[in-house]
Length: 577
Image (cartoon, rainbow, N blue to C red; front, side, top):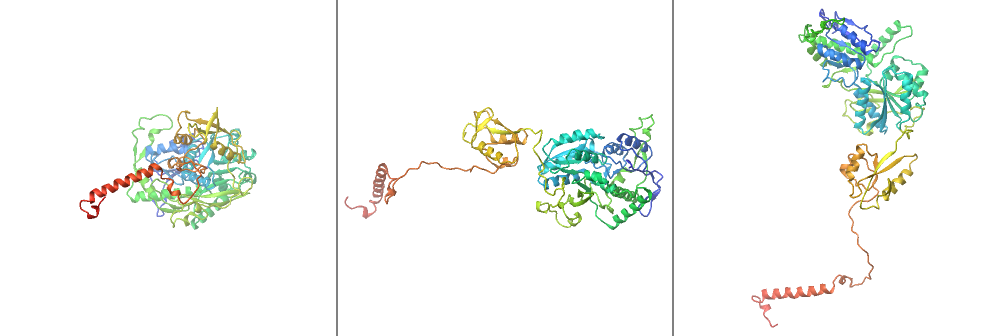
């Protein structure tokens, strides 16, 4: 497969045909670097010695990072349908245009699948290059948005041997999580799954989620050999979604007839990358048509920064800047057409509108689609275009997938984790209180007792598996420690959990999860209880002798005051004593 498809539009380009196809175009579809980033860069430099106005390629994101620097310097738009690394940003590489879906959306789909089934931790196995590292970083961000995480990252060399793969998988098998995301290339992926099958890691309890490298194999190499498909059994993979249409069906039919006639082994399958490659050529043709309609001309100027770079066989000083590069780039981003992959229109951040993927489950000697994912409405059982006419609905009730046959040929959802063979003890913080030691108190070195400890021990004993843990005191023992400070240490990872009479308040619930409260909170009044006989005169008991005397004195004082004030003007108060 060609690593670079370089479309060079020379200065003798005379125009555009009525169908928007570039005429008199010099092309180089035969540049093949055999997946070598170094050869791809060298061949690009050699080819760019000729006056070039646009590049289609490269195939790998690793090469695209370097070629994008060349495209920026010479102001030549670089279109790639397979360099899906999300860090190929238009801010850093303004002349890079991705004509398929970014890995950012693929990782968002995987994170949504993980969250849909209630798993919280995954293991990421990836090739240790730009695309692998950046893809896993994007996966970590998307998982964090759903309060999930990558518990273990397992990088592999870009060209791993079977021993390399075995070493990585042995380490993975010793960990706790059984949800494995495999982000690699079509060349290394089958070897990883084959070794996993040999190590017993495709058995019941495991979940394997492969990025779209697997769907590319299933599409291009169909039918895949039965022994290879046996290694893929139960794996979930993604495929870039392209809506069904008459134009797409006719193109696939023509492709099958063409490859069948030129191949002795039957027709060569067509993956979604092939569909996007076809649309990329038409996208560029429409953009060049618009470029000329806006008065654009093909002209070049010398790069002053390259004039001093002379000598050697690369002849770098022969590279020229395309004067109309910015206008052509603008025309590319303004293209609005419908291709065999569906509507082609760029958003403000240079992604295609409505990115979507098919969710596929490999079963037996074939595979079945179990649903869709779209950035618009999440997981669904109906094609995404049927949901675009309605408001987006991301509620948990609307997120659905068909039943899945998991590794081990089971339809029961795997728990997603096991007790790790190399697992560490849980670090549990316990407040070292001064007051209310009936709740929790330290009785020795890292030994505690109290009501909270008893509740925790009883809960652990009810679990169907062992949980190793160790209690650590928190506080100086002279003052009651702050519950908020203890909770903060859980978020930083210093403690895995905490036990004690920790009040459940709003600020704390935002950063950690609490158990159901097992102690009722609130203010109460405690008073002694005395038994006494009840009678009709019980209401007089609160009145003591002093109370009666005080009442009589106040009675006389009030009477005297009333008499003093009234006897001068009121005849009723002037009688004899």
